Image (tube, rainbow, N blue to C red; front, top):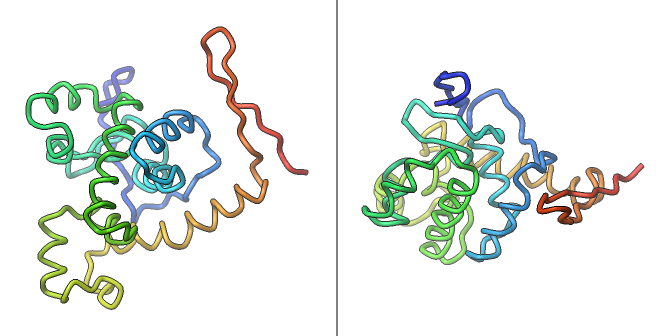
Length: 196
């Protein structure tokens, strides 16, 4: 729910019409903080934010997933436990809370699948119960059974593997410039040198 406008915003999920936008630097500091804390690649976290919400913090999906990383209440409970989850769920639209929870959730699946990013992303997007049944049915083989995934999950994985990786290559090549964080009077500022 957008508190200012009182409007419930629907998310155009992975199959939606928005592009991967990695040159949105608004949440880079928060992403870097929790990526480092939980040992997840910042580019992966930023890709999930871009694909899931297009950097819109107040998005709510038709399945009641919320915020930048489109988290369900079940995911929040999985990460924080029932007691703490209530507090976190009430603040799920806060970028800091959402990114920390989403990054921990990603880390859970990356660890579970021994660092296999594709499996972690499918589990993150489709849900552990669904993906566990899929892996059982397909002899634990995702790569040779991508067509059997639901369209939304397949689109999510495709966006990450094609568009996000390509966009990050451009960013790292200097197309968007390198971000150097400085703090002035308690305000974090990104200074960026943009390539000509």
